[in-house]
Image 1 (cartoon, rainbow, N blue to C red):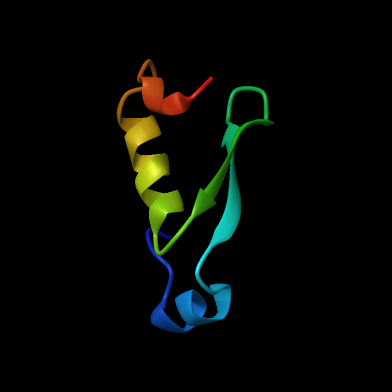
Image 2: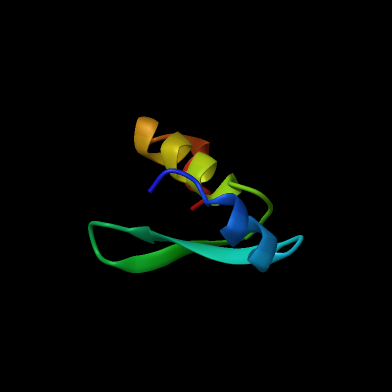
Length: 57
């Protein structure tokens, strides 16, 4: 999945809370407040560069 459907976005409302999980240890390392498809953008940024400050650790 790389984005929410329009129907899903409507049911989510203005904001939602999401967590990113480190696949190495299955621990949540970041909790964010998102709008639209932000969670997927954040995930792509983190996966593209594991040493990036986007990991927000």
